[in-house]
Image 1 (tube, rainbow, N blue to C red):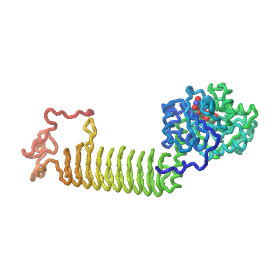
Image 2: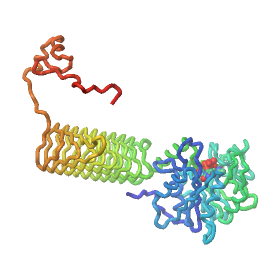
Image 3: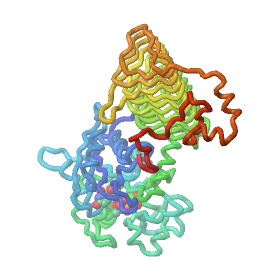
Image 4: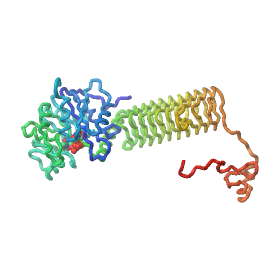
Length: 533
Ligand code: UD1
Ligand code: CA
């Protein structure tokens, strides 16, 4: 796997910093059966983005608070690769979702208790803000340090602040939009649902990312009461508590407010997707990938692409896909969980899943690779070819209209047009093994299990039911009969004559008694009924 340039940490972990990530909510506004933090953004569950950030910053360890679908969220977290010298990640459960303040309190045993060295300060993150960047969080931490603050907030100035908590300052300026963040002393945060009409007009919002002094955090949370519109323990109330005690509250404001997007709805999910897509496309273009129509190209955050590869419009690269150098991926192709070598050409309209294409292979147009396909070097898979759990050997070709499943195909094999591996007997799947240098004629059926020996030749139209020895010719089809003048005589007949000659009125039936009309269905064999199969 090639490394993603953006994901290499450039700077070091912050000593004494603990991170707490809140990920226990269901996310009612998503109207989903899936916990909010498990929704994908650019092919990765949202929670990963936030944990990535904490992992690059918090030397003192990370606590992730889970609740809704705790097991599923835990599983996603456990699937993360453990970083070599990274911080320890602990998952804690919030059994009832009583609010963000209550959520953070659940992390207390991770950092406090016998034999534990408490963190000097905490970075607290909502699990639903995947667009934040490491640079922004370092800026937030710097503000906290240089201002000597007890609580430092990350704020954003939004044209439409609806839904966010507002930052209430002692001497609010008439219009927060002009002239950047207000300079008045922060008094508290008020949630949208609790805000007065005047407070609703404040455009400076709480992003939900905080740095809090270690000695203050849990002690202050013990004092938070659920006295608000939602009856919840608000984490944001610790701001008011700090202000009441005359402790210093600092604010760092986002330069790009889009980074602060909290995902509460499907609309916001789509906004986040677009932003991550834009960043990902930019990153790969900077790495030397040509993207002809960037806004139409969809690249998961988990994908790697080599330089001098060209992506045509409407390409989607998904999951654990890696594409080598000097590849061309033509329009309207989807590649999911595939390993693609160098100098590979994928023509238009392909669906490629969980497969490997080695160097200098050529795929498509209209190829469907299902899981478990290996296309060896210089091999070719052409139009309307479907493959599954099949290896196609070096230099071999399956150029047209085939189904190849559960097969191992050697080197320099030619698979003729219309070749089908009959791999399924209704109960079990069976294997087809084809040796090197085999020529499979067009319209061959290979009834598995069956072996075709090296160097052999299968005549077109053959149904192969027995193994073929090396270097043999296999031919299995009814012998052809040519009837002289038959077609001409039929043409010469009148319509009623032709009808009479054909008995049941079968099209294609012949003019002479030597060619008996084919019955529609033989005795005892019923024609399949319409709609029943
Ligand atoms: C929160 C902030 C709000 C801020 C906004 C930014 C509070 C009270 N409000 O509001 O000021 O503007 O984020 O996006 O904090 N969670 C739990 N347990 C709970 C409740 C929530 O773990 O009991 C988690 C959720 O999974 C989510 C995060 O906390 O990841 C934020 O919760 P959410 O309900 O989205 O808060 P907002 O109403 O958006
Ligand atoms: Ca939220």
